[in-house]
Length: 270
Ligand SMILES: [Zn+2]
Ligand SMILES: [Zn+2]
Image (tube, rainbow, N blue to C red; front, top):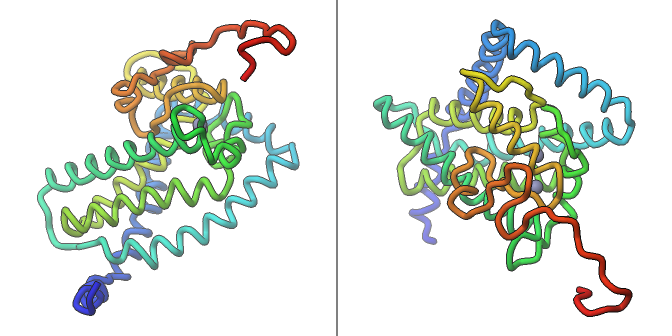
């Protein structure tokens, strides 16, 4: 790397745009919450998840984990919005199709790498043996999660998940050019809300909520057993492609079946 590279990088540092992005994310999230609450189905889901959350918070260990995460969350936000996003942003006008295409590319590229990390590092579902299962095991203590359980997680996992997401934005911006502020606001809100919704306790399986029901049910299948499928988070595309869709019976090659009892000291012990 030469000095021209670093000069170019310094010239591309736009902290003001990063600040606008952060404010935009907060504003869209707030407005979205108000809008969604106009729909009775969402109001009922919120009530159910809030009540479950309140019960879980009575457990001091549960509350301690969430406090632990909030503390680290602030630190991650500062690193991302002060140290990384300022290099990836532009306010120059872009056609709507480009903003939408960029949103799609960022989320799907992230989802691909998250699938690999989740399947091969966080779970023992491949040739690597799951070296980071001890980190991910914290999140899997919740076998039937509610919305807030998307934050019941080891802070290291948040660092890896958010780090991967922001790394995707940074690397893609080197190839595709700086992303519009609106692109990052939309993808950030989508990324957060999808992750939250996957953990939602959700009971409504009729139009137009069928997709939301499927996404929640599939992630709950993942939480039901540590050996479950459904490793991607944004969509089910990669689980479909790689044969790890789990409708509650496990995925092909890792179906749930009662384990045959081994004879004491017998063959087949592993
Ligand atoms: Zn998992
Ligand atoms: Zn989860």
